[in-house]
Image (cartoon, rainbow, N blue to C red; front, side, top):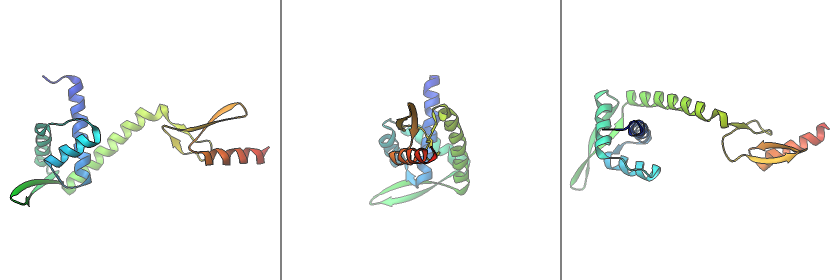
Length: 148
């Protein structure tokens, strides 16, 4: 029986498989290799092929047979409907991620860009100020000197 954690992971696994399909037409073995290389996690062929079958049943994926030497491989690609579906899922996921990381977003005092990680920090007039880079920090300090 699948645990809640495995079920949730499985949904993220399917999402990432969709990302890989969106990037390029690919065969099942290629999906597994890319998935494992990028995420450092394994994924079973049963999950891959059952997901491809589900996408195919909704007309989101087409398959063509490619001859490689003596072997035939099934190569899968998203249909136009599949690309639209993927883009909707990407937008939905993007909204979820934005909500999750919003409390950790900082703003560069120099240029106003949103910073998630690795902000450059300087103490100016006793106050810690975040920047995206040393150039913005220099520009900020130069502007502050001109204003005073």
